[in-house]
Length: 103
Image 1 (cartoon, rainbow, N blue to C red):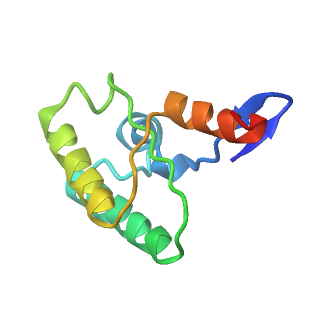
Image 2: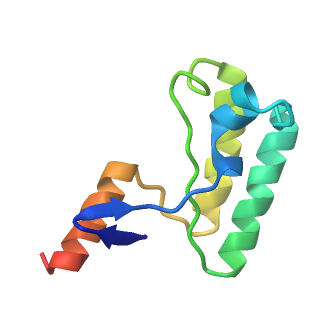
C-alpha cells in the first residue's frame, strides 16, 4: 500500500477477485471447491511470508449465492486462523492515511 497525492493505493491481483472467476473469465475457477482451495493456498503461502492479501468479493456476485458464501466463509475462516485481520477497504484506507499523517 502507498499514498499517492493523498490517494491510498491498495495492491490487488485479478485472481483474488470473485467476479473474475464467476462471471468474467472463461478460464476462471467457477468450481466453488477449486476456487476456495486455490484462495486458501494463496493465503497460506502469503501468510508464510508474513504478507498482505487483498481479496475482493462483491455482494452482487458472491453474496447472492449461499454456496458461494459458504466457499468464501471457508477462505475467511482460514485467514482468521492464520492470524490475518480482515478489514474493509475503507477502514484500511483510513488507517493508512492516519499513519501517514501521524493522526
